[in-house]
Length: 440
Image 1 (cartoon, helix red, strand yellow):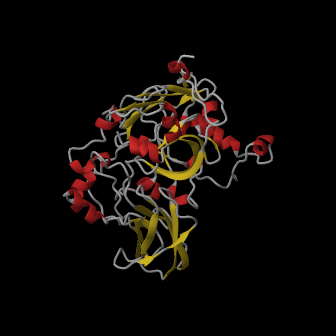
Image 2 (cartoon, rainbow, N blue to C red):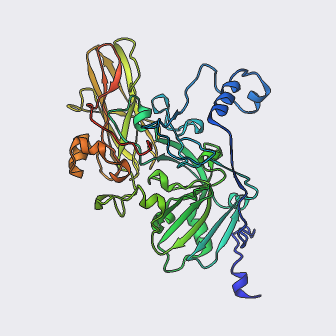
């Protein structure tokens, strides 16, 4: 047998063929379901919890009405051109979450102006090629026959930023979520394909009309990146990348390419549209290796729009996370940062995942300013707004006038102010114009 030909068909320990060698185009079309129709369907779903449909696929109580919030427009009277169909982005209702897992239906989602493709998993394929010894093509079923991992990781959009204009935790930190992801370590696929010596980066490409593409350093790809087909115990939902998406733990959300169809191994990063249009600034602090989020935290209760009914005992709670690894500790202040107390940790402390913290608090009916700060495994402490602005050499006004995606990871502390009536509002002082990465 020709060794060149036989080398192109690889087997794992079970001896089953893992991949074909011919790339077939994916069956992709865009769903035309409107947002209003989807909302109407969701409302109809909660009518009868005793119905057969409710037995087959569980549903929440009709008294639970938490939903995602649609991303707004800074200038709704001047709508920019959009593809048809168009699906807006939506934020996680952070202030209503419990624990560390974000329900898939409430997890934030961003499509970058393109509708969600309707992909038949039986026809979808993933190609691995470029600087490899054996270019390979995998079906979804073939991927599910490979060794897999299940890990809990957060995803966060680089547009997440504390803002004086945010009324709620969803407004300021709603572009994030944390899920259990299940899939094949990318290292397994790259090892199967065989990396050439010149290999330094991978390029991941999606199947949507925009063909979203991102460059990932090869050491990261071989470390903890996975090709995920599961989210929170079920197949990845369409708006989260069904049937396959890339999970790049700790990196900016835009690296986690959805509807994954192609991975090309290359010798250098490709400056793709999403990398040069909004995500590379002139300041060298933003490049070339500032992928990982620093330590962040936010108090989710009580937080903006919440109302404390009366003075007495409460539990301040929130989440902390870092792209640099596990959270080491979280401190909470009730006096605007003058003093801090170390919070208790509820549940597991996982790497590159939400960590739930809490601190019992007896409110005496006086004004209070609640805020938290996180310390991660690398010894990095979450900064204050003033410390962050000083690092970048900006005034406070300049800090909020800058595009978030060109200003690092915007991880400064967000305070919540509790007035004597128990009303909770944003504790950041007002500022002039605030640029929003998703407002245009």
